[in-house]
Image (cartoon, rainbow, N blue to C red; front, side, top):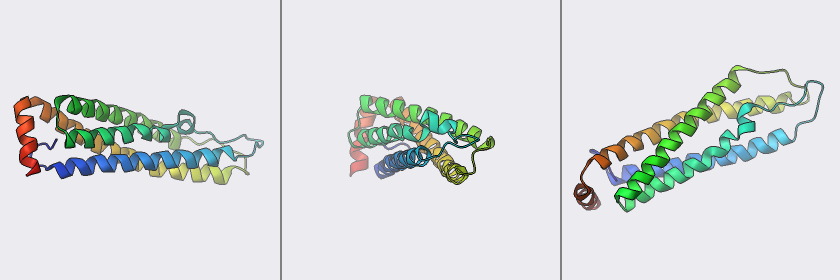
Length: 169
């Protein structure tokens, strides 16, 4: 499902990058889970940001599914797979944008925590800063591929099969 002047390899690379971003987010979710579960109750309490409570990093599973659907629609170009990839990429853009907003909200507010948990809170905020950059990357990739899917769907179904045959040559 290459669009415009791009090749099928470009779409495959975008799908692979989406899968890698999703796996990275799952690993960061697990890291934050271990980090925040190990906090000690102190006078000022524990640090549990909104992104941890909502599991924003765990939403990486949607990026994995989106990347897999992108790769599948590139390999086997059909209208249904293209629509499925479009839906998953739009959903990935929405979830990444929500996670981006929640992370910005988390980083802009910081409540006092117990001195015992300050190191964990600071490390968790650094992880959130890293995830902030990857949310922007995911929005860009999913949006670019969504535009390609829309351009592909605007073509006739006969054009989709001939374009696939031409790009595989």
